[in-house]
Amino acid sequence: MASHTSRGLLSLGRISASALGLQRPLSRVTYATNVSTNYSAGKTGLPDRGAGKFARRPRRAPGEPRTEKMPVDQDWTAVYPAAAPFRPGSVPLPVRMGYPVKRGVPPEKKGNLELIKIPNFLHLTPAAIKKHCEALKPFCTEWPSALDTDARCDAHFPIKAESTDYVSAGPSVRNPAARTVHLKVKLSSLNLDDHAFKKMLKLVGERYCRDTDTLTITADRCPLRQQNHDHAMYLLTVLYHESWKTEPWEAEKSVADMEEYSWEDSPSQRNLLDTLVRVEAAGEGGGGGEEVREQLLGRREVQEYKDSVTRLKNEGESESTVMLYKEAVKKVLNL
Amino acid sequence: MRPRPCVRGGAGTPSAVSPQEGRFSRRGLFSLTRILGGIAHSVPRALGACSANKTCNIIRSRLPLASSTYFHTATVFSSQPSSITVTKEPDALFQRVSLLVKGHDKSVLDSYELFATMAAKELGIAISKVCELPKDTERFTLLKSVHIFKNHRVQYEMRTHYRFIELSHLTGSTAQVYLEYVQRNLPEGVAMEVTKTAMEKVPDHILKPMWEEDPIDNKLSQG
Image (cartoon, rainbow over all chains, first blue to last red; front, side):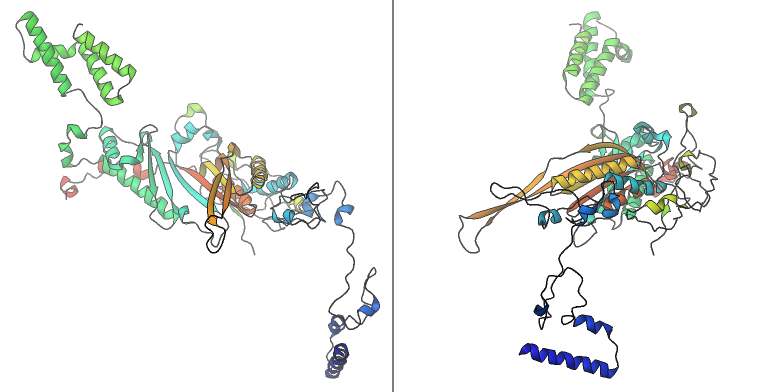
C-alpha cells in the first residue's frame, strides 16, 4: 500500500519536473531503483527485490584486493606517500595483530581494528626518508669546521642560551614553560679582575657553580622567549659593570665577609709567632722586637705551616691536608 | 599559497682556520651577499667554504629540478622549482639539540627513533647520544562501584616511555629543517620536548667595564 502511494508520488514528481521544463538528469540516478540499466556487471541483487524498496540498493561484490596485483619491485612511496591509516588491501604483508582466542592465532589483518588504531610508519620507510632528505638537503647549512671540539666552541662562543620547545597534542599548542631562557657563562671568559670577580660572586650568590665555574641566569618573567633572552643579557651586562665598580662602603669588608682564608693578620699567625718568639727568648734570652718576627716569617718551616693551615681552611679536612698540617707543625716546633 | 622557503645561510665563523693563526677578528664574518636564484641539486653546497673576510660571490644558474618528476612522496614544497633565498642574517649555532620523545607505546617510540636517527644521518647531523630512559608509571586506585562497596576497587595505571636523542653541532638552518621534518612526522599520541643550546659570543658591551671611559663620581653611586 505504502509502495503504491510512493510510486504514485514518484510519477507526480517527475511530471511536475518535466512540466516546469527543468532538466534534471540527476533525478534519473536518484530514482534508480526501478531502472536496471545503471547497474555494473556482477550484481547479485534480484530484479524484483528492487521494486519499491529503493532504500536498500544491492551492493556490488568487492573485487580482489590491490595486494594481489602489486609487483615486488614497486615504488612503495607511491602507495603510502603520507601518513595514512592502515589499509589491509594496500599492504601486501600477512600481518596478524590482537589477542588470540584459546588455541588460536592472532586475528588476520582484514577488518582488524588494532592495526588501524596503532600509528604506522608505512610512509616513513628508509627509501622514503632518503627521498625526503634529498629534497631537504639544499636548505641545510654546514657547521663551520673550525669549531669541531667543545673547547674551541667555548673559547669563541662562551655564552650559551638554552631554551626548550614543547610539542604535544591537546586543546592548545602553546606551553607556558617554553618561554624560559637559561643563560650560562664561564666567568673565566669574561674580563674580570680579582675584586670584580669576588664582587660578582657576592652579587649572584647561588647562581654560580664553583666546580664548573659557570654562572647560570634563568629568565622567566617575560611572556615571550625573545624578551626573556634580552632580559637575561641585560642582567649579565648590569652584573658585569656593577662588579667593576668600587663602592665606598666596600672598605668595611670584614674578615667574616672574605671568601677565602688568608693567613696574614690571622690569629693563627699571631699565635705561632708569639710561640716562636717565646721559644727564642727562652733559648737565647735577649733580642726581640719586630725584626725577630719578620725573620721568623721568612723561615721555611713557617711558610710550610702557613700553606698547610691555608689549605686546611680553604679545601676542608681530608687525609692529605691533615697529614700536611701534622708534618708542618712537627717541623716548626722541632718535635 | 605557501610562503617561499627561506634559508638563513652562511657560516658563522670561517671554515678553515689553522691552529697557528691565533685569534681572528670577530667582525666581518657574517657578510654574505643576497643571492636569489634557482637551486639545483648538482650545484655543490659552497656555503661552508666561504672564508672569513671574503664575501661570497656564488651565482647560481637557473637549472630545472630534474629529480622532481620522480618524487612521489608528499613534500613541503610545491612541484615548481623552488628558489632558496640566502639572507645576510648570520646563522645561529647550536652546540647541542636534544630531543626527548614521550609516548605510551614502546614499539612506536622504537620506530620513531629509527626514523629520527636515519633522518639525522641522511642530513649529515652528528648524533652524540641515543638512549632509553626508564619508564614512568602513574597508578591510582578508584572505587569500583558508584555507591558503597568500599572493599572493591579497581586500579589503573598509565605508562610513559621515553627516548632521548642528542644531536650536536647544528646550524640554525639545519636545526630548523630537521626539527620541522621530525615534528611533522610525529605520530599521534607521542609528545616531544626539544632543548636547544645556542652559542653566542660575548657582546661588545661586556668586553670592558664602562667606568674606564667615563668615570662616575662616587657621590652619584651613593644613595
